[in-house]
Length: 185
Ligand SMILES: Nc1ncnc2c1ncn2[C@@H]1O[C@H](COP(=O)(O)OP(=O)(O)OP(=O)(O)O)[C@@H](O)[C@H]1O
Ligand SMILES: [Mg+2]
Image 1 (cartoon, rainbow, N blue to C red):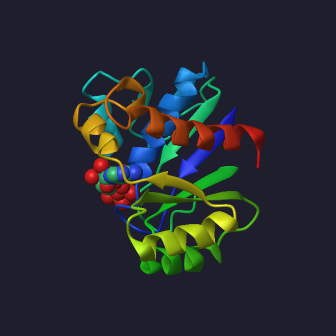
Image 2: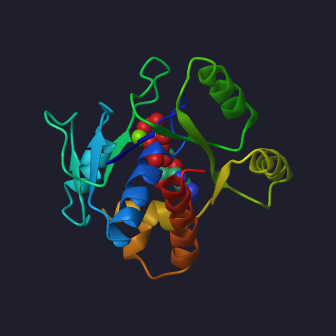
């Protein structure tokens, strides 16, 4: 079983959005998936309660380890709660404040596989392109600013249940993140 945490010291970076869409990508690829919602805001649990996701979300740590291929954690934006998992995906907005907060947090993290994920990148903005280009060269994953991420969650779904404008591109960028986690690079 692979345990993957979506974690960031920053609020609103895209942890819940990416955790649910990553789970959907793994589900679509044929993996058994469970999402564990560790955030007291219970956003992922709220989405799940609409009964449209093709995988389950539980509102706390499972008492016994479930027999799934992916256990995916959605974390609250707390510096103190560094996840006990092998792979941590850190969504971050392409802003200097996110960059600094993440760099500071990373000083406290050892022996984990970290994938930085620049999220909601608007390539029309020069300063966002500048940050994304720099971090991409250092191995960060890029997820673009797409309204399909917002509109799908508003319906209680993920981009993998959509066919409209931007759906395929969104699915592709999440699939690439999944492939990376599976490949271990
Ligand atoms: N790639 C994206 N493109 C467009 N909008 C996005 C994208 N990712 C996230 N959003 C939007 O940004 C907002 C914050 O995202 P989300 O709730 O996933 O962040 P979070 O890190 O889980 O926040 P919190 O720290 O409060 O738990 C939401 O309205 C979401 O729909
Ligand atoms: Mg969240």
